Image (cartoon, rainbow, N blue to C red):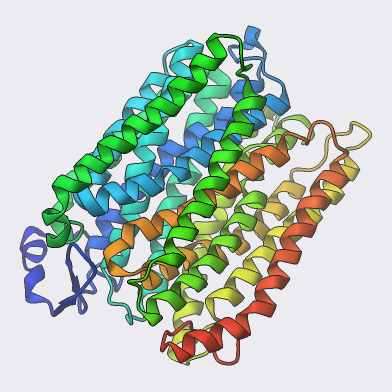
Length: 523
């Protein structure tokens, strides 16, 4: 589709609009981007390049850490590398909570995305500099920037649609296609440069992708209209929010300083194991504290409170799904590197290339899935969100059933066919398309408008917990037999899916009483 010309871009007000979430209005009759609002095009391409930067670096991360120092790597063992990988990917999503709060109370979504993208770019280019200090500093910058960008760009997608717009799930699936076009290209480009030329050149290429994304975001910004600006009530509360933000920063620095001081005095050994323990306690405290705060607020209406119950269920589903799915960058990446036949026409395929398979399947299958949701929705037969989550969890579990066979075949030291991983990633992709974009869409629909970005942060908190558990579980991949390791993940994924199938009926009845459409009939 051709991009809108300047005249079309400037006449957004000519389209029928309806009140939206805080920070903008919705063009309910705007169909200029493949039948969707033209602003979706801006967010589609911005997220595509941001995900290029993230997945390009992610494909290299564990391989770089486990590579011998003689080959330019860090020389870490699998257990240490998996723990660091899990901590990093967990933090990337954990900081979506303060990132959402900052957007809701201080910057608005529009500015938060821009500032976040700039910080991410700095992080990638810092990782392009050799040295341990630059490596960890770069990871830290990417964590902070992603926390500002990731939840808020998703909230802006939701703001493009009214709550009852039948295009919402399909719009998020198209948005998901943009994510995965970037995720497909990134391992091929960054992976090739990193594995075959220089690790740090691969990290720099990821930074270039983020810079392009920010250029697109600014140039196409007019297509967003008033979407993503700070709400008037938040403007009034900005001074108090700024003070609270300062207190939060000071408390965080005091905590980190105290931990470092204890380590410097020899009172506490600071290594990846102790850091993991500290982080796990903090993560549990955040989850318990956040949901405790949400469920004890007295100002929620009965409708909002029922929505929070469903959000809690979807949070659990996100945790269990990403625990399994995020083995892609750790245990499955290592399996591709060490146990898979990668020869092709006399050449050796870089292990990081396998990270593109999931994305390739997504942007080829996503239009079909989006079409199915639209077709079922028009017939009032769309499965409910819990049913879709159950299907997604079963699919990801079946992917690890395949890996039980792959690991058994490689137990003698033989290299196995790459088709084992291809089939695993196909099943994981079907699970992801059934669960992840639906979860994003459900959060934007269920979240009370005054905390829309914060509630998107709750969704990403589920990803954070899942990623942390994924890294923790992956740290055992080097010490457990392959069939046992992959069998454990398969079992907990499929059992979690069954929980959602059983819970779907009661939750649907509760939502119907609260007059919330979850889709489907009889689920």
